[in-house]
Image (cartoon, rainbow, N blue to C red; front, side, top):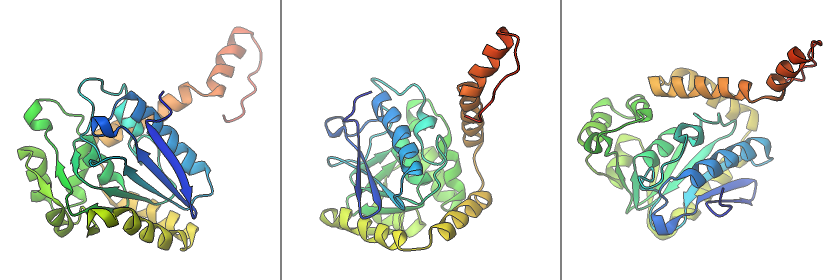
Length: 246
């Protein structure tokens, strides 16, 4: 994994996680996917109160890299591959395409630059992972269908009007606007934020692909655990297993 594909910085109890392939418009390849998953796990284990997902360069992400797609895209999606225990803010500008839209969909809040353009072109190119289906539970149904089925561009202002974005700011103010929101969240009661996020996750319907991805990843974690290795070893050695819950 390239260490530079994802940058992880900490400022004022805020984790700033940056997609860092600006030359490829932050297309999501295996380096990005592995780096993001590691970043979510690091964030969960850290003392940071809130995370900002943002990007280097002009564009947030043009989606999955068609020239070198990740081996397991759902594993890197926040709140799908790794269930976050603390709030996540997306801070985006330029093109937000395909898997980039899914990342915004799964964030708690989104601040967008006034040049942000959302697009989901999978129906035009003939393949889908369908994680986007849950968007219909998060913004008005007909708008979600327009984005998914027609593949039309959704500009920053309309994204704000339909609730995909919380705030639209000039591009030069994007980072500071996201940090202002993050500071406010970092000053709030962590247990309350965690509980409300957990309860909201019970309220918002999840698409079939979300259920499948979460179930598959949960099973994968058990299969790759130290306890699984210990179980096999103890069976071969004809002894009682010593499980540690790891």
